[in-house]
Image (cartoon, rainbow, N blue to C red; front, side):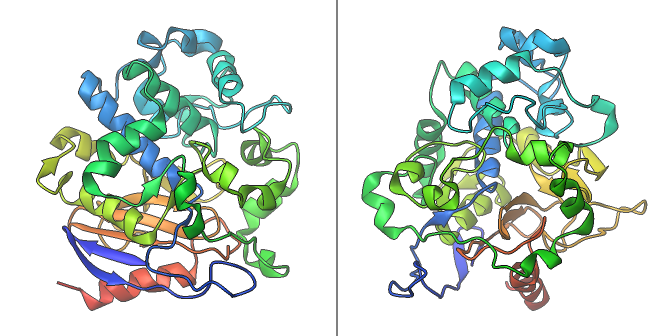
Length: 363
């Protein structure tokens, strides 16, 4: 776990081991897969490219990606996609593979939305990020996501986070491990029931495009860490992810460099939709690509996953990881681990740390 205020690292906690045999101690610079936490990084890259291209949330995607107009998507906007209201939450093609980027992009171009934009959010575990990567490529003349991240953010800020890990860094990566048997009882009941039905939208969203045939064992290899899966392929240290969110919380500025305009930062911290999510099967709120805690009718938080600030935003990762920015306090938080927990949202192992930090009111 790591916690920044502005450009100052206030807390860095780490322990455990990189491997199941407990031979290699976890260090402060240990890297680990961040799963869907990768989407927060992809969103920041896409928003930056949009900003540089002079686009806004009302810009139609098909205006710069003509093939996207197929399937009745001619008028779909960047705001629809970023807030998970595009209806592009799952693939119907069982043969589509997560490693086939070109095939996924062509599928997205032809796909008809599975839900109307006024039906609320339907979180997209995979297609969302692949669409954003293609948008980034279209807006930058073909630059890859991994190169854009390192050139614009990673290298200038010295952030230990990669989408496409160099082979030289693989020795620092901790192997991820699935939840142990018996932990599934902790899953959210609605999500667990829906996912158990192979014909449900929830099941299709998480299993199509199809995962790697080797499962988790194949994910824990340098070859896959070097790949650039935009939805789940990020590798980072807790310090790297916290530093990234601290930059966003600090008015988009770090090391004397300002990366984002005020309007773009407002997109990150403004709820575009909230309510029951059709895929995660719980109440969610989304800004322009980031998750936020839902609010009640009085504007009060109904959940405190991202701390106490109403404007805090971030993203969860499979197994219970979390990264978020709190613009009100100008802080960045990250919790990463190798032993996954079951459930849709991070649990006490993570939220207890968030609560402790906010209760301490660190200066």
